[in-house]
Length: 390
Image (cartoon, rainbow, N blue to C red):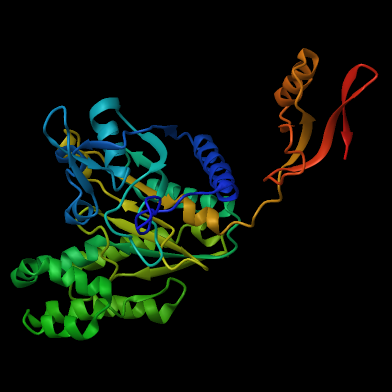
């Protein structure tokens, strides 16, 4: 095996792609700042007991673990930044009222999260702490919409769910609670045959409700689909309450004034079940097999850090989203000769201070290609350095 071969699902980012990613990262963070979000930068690794506290089994199996040579304690390379931001809000900032935080950075996964996914996603996101109402959920969804628009995505789909629906069904049956992990996996895989077989071992109402969830998928604009869900949850008041909270969110004018966004519901989406506490969502774009954005409410996570705070937010995979953007034309630049001349260095410095790209051609490399489109040149005329078109 060649020494330079990278691990599976790990790749380099080359100049053109890196430029798109960085431009989008700056644009999104600047956008979030206009909404009042403050940037934080958590460390790449932490002690494992802090990094995984309150996140459930799913994040544990996705986290690379190592031993700290200084303390001897087990550490983890973060697989998700959101728990770290929750720790910052609860343990370090310790503010009263609403706090808005955003972040951007690499995470590392032991296995790819989906088909063709990288194991080193570049995660960017935003979180609101301190408000339990639907207004915070709507603001987060608005930021998701603005993020997709910034990337030039013309159409996308948002699947909505509320973990309270499945929780209510499971809580009604001790047998279902004992087999919770298996049930959640079958719901997520949409494995109707296996779920039907498992449901036959549970009470009849619980079994029927669980199997019905696989058909609880459709557009929020489809009256027949909504009526089907109402009927499926008729015998479960707590499940109906969670469903009504989801429906209330979809009635917002914010979500209904974006025709490019198709709103769907998927009550069998159980990703992050141990982590989330209310509304959840996932956004999908044409050209990508995996969700490009995931988020939702996770009110209980901060409790393990000493402060139980309402919380909702999202994270998106910046590399995948940037990959859908139209490739930008090469940046115009000025080519300049390489001379050890103070007046030339002064002229180049002045141009760069004005935001121009100035590429000095090293001797013997005058005809080499590069990422920039050099459409002008810096030449000496009458003892002065001037810019001329090529």
